[in-house]
Image (cartoon, rainbow, N blue to C red; front, top):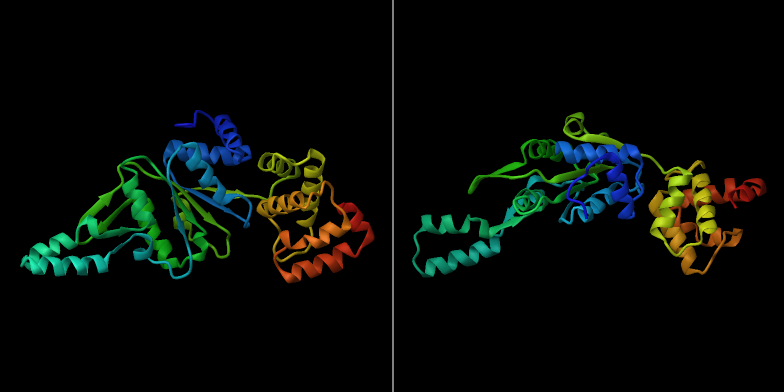
Length: 298
């Protein structure tokens, strides 16, 4: 495993060894983020491999992956820390039986031992031991208020807990922020990061990914699956399938002991690729019902 990246070529090689096929543009961003100790902001359609970048980075550096899954209503207390109120109440009763004075009880119960660390604080404190990878996943699902709070954290990697004081990371965590672009993320957050848009893979890249992730697959079959997926993405769909759907589909076909695509198996397994009923209907009526197009897909 690596302890640092020597060059952009080294990043490409290391990622490939960890079964992640990356182009030079992404490798450059990862190299610079590591050297400059800056967060990475990865944007792109769902299923193109954004989250996987953080997972692979944690494996390469043999460190912890700390994940903060964003959602509507996420706030500072849920992402940073909370006090363990049941444990505090229990300790108050025990101390009152010992006739401990109130000021001393307060000092005891508002100490790190009663703190529930959420992902952001965990990443700040864990950096004292070994720099972790902090994944802030799908930031576009959170509210703008949380975005503003996150700006402060990413600026200094320190937080102030009124009862304890300021806690600051001795080393900056490696941070990967992802977005599916369901809404625009504020420029102020992007400016603190190195930005990269992950495209749908080219045919060559998709073929390499299939061969890397599914070592038991036959090369000609992998090529057929990759070509099919490239064509599917040209159809007028609500949600184009990503590489995760490609791998799910190929794995499903292998489980069915298929070694080539035919009309029947495509229709039977369409739910592995398309996740909306409208898209399945569109594909069947506008694509698969046309003899010429069906032949081109196969």
